[in-house]
Length: 313
Ligand code: GTP
Ligand code: MG
Image (cartoon, rainbow, N blue to C red; front, side, top):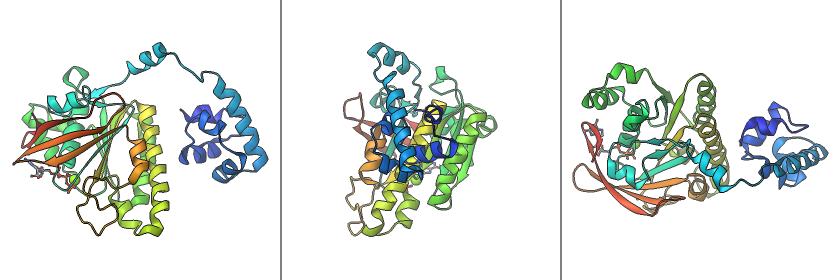
């Protein structure tokens, strides 16, 4: 799943590769099984050329079409696990937030999504033996909720140097959904220079929800969101980074997707996020995390706290 792999196909230049990747054709197999008509539409190329690309992808995809379990196990060894701050929460996720995947935290206002974001931004900069990813971290902030002061507070509570950690956190404030998508592209650029091991998008859906209103806009919203998610997956892949996105659920029944347990974004997000965690408020600073969807962990719950020191047991 790399741009290079697709660019190597005869007839595919960088611009076509970019269009294909953007539209979700992120591996050879996806291209190999597509029809020339659809592919010519997507990549804005002639149908004959599209046909040739599909043929080449079929040929190339055969090599390494299957991998042994042993090979896959070897790949899994590179997966990093990022400490959430609370052991029970880590256990729920199979040791922590995984790199190479998208983890979605969804829940109502005040359920702790933004606080978790701050905590893991700090944790990602820590060495691996401390549950970190030994790298830098990045946040696309769509609701103007990132607070450097909060980072300092969390760092100080753990006897860490706030300045050192703030230097490793890159913040992009997204003013609208278009800008949000541009920032994801910028992230890919910056990821080439710096070992960015965590990318947070808080919130993934707020701009999309505000800008694409009503049933008529739904299909377009989902398509655009899908494009954005594929860009994030690409980042995860290239940097062996953890992608964490937040998503608010609305208790307002008048709104589309008004079910309080259903995240905004519908099922495209459902299929793209590998781990989905539902957060809800409990007494005081207690919060409950529920794992809804995971490839290898049983569903379950964990209790954690949002305190001055950050996320704790
Ligand atoms: P929305 O973005 O509105 O959907 O909510 P959220 O899920 O992001 O909630 P957030 O993480 O912002 O807040 C969770 C809880 O953390 C809140 O109920 C606050 O009481 C608490 N909280 C927020 N900021 C701080 C802080 O700076 N210090 C402490 N100790 N608690 C905070
Ligand atoms: Mg928030």
